[in-house]
Length: 268
Image 1 (spheres, rainbow, N blue to C red):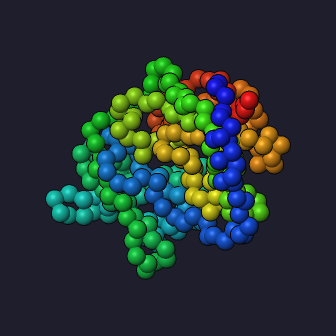
Image 2: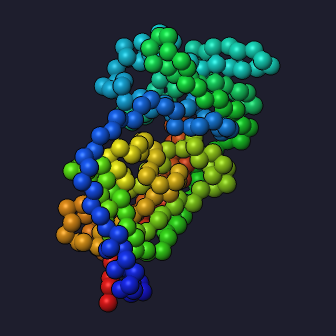
Image 3: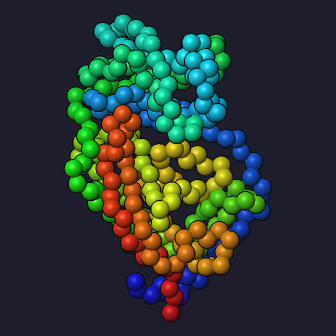
């Protein structure tokens, strides 16, 4: 790695201003992780984030569907037909909302949820495409970005966010064209040194299961310039990094091997 110019480091250090305001934010509410558009032909349903259903139990799930707090509507030629639906747990707080009869390629559906029995519906409309997404037969490539020095906002225990000088590196799981088109229907996971990597820029930031604090399908690794900082997660040196993309009901769509990634701030 090339040496980092002292002038650049000085400017970054001058920009460091630890916040003193305590964190005051509400937790993330219910939502669908997909925002609409087209989903693959072999998709089973939509990702529904609902931490209020924890601990997961059949009665809570049954009440949400039976009391019409959740719905799936098939839309065809201006006519709407409500379908029987079910929730399937994926992770804690994350579920798959799917119709019992399955989805049909080329058809339109509206997925909705509401708070209480008479609240307004929060809905997402999707069209089921005619293209399927299947697991890759070989390992996917992990694209590693350059090592850069920057000021990062990181979640801290005494404030919503703290600014730290860090050396960062972007990573991206390179997907096949079909899977790239349907990234919203995939769940992503970054594993560093055998452990899940899930930092946040603020305690109030919403980082949902299957997503990262960066753009969909990407992540950001870092090590702090202050190697003794209590916020230090990844020590300077090499780290084994792996990314995985999966689709419920289908399995792992793409996965990289363990790639050695170098992280260290060096100044001469």
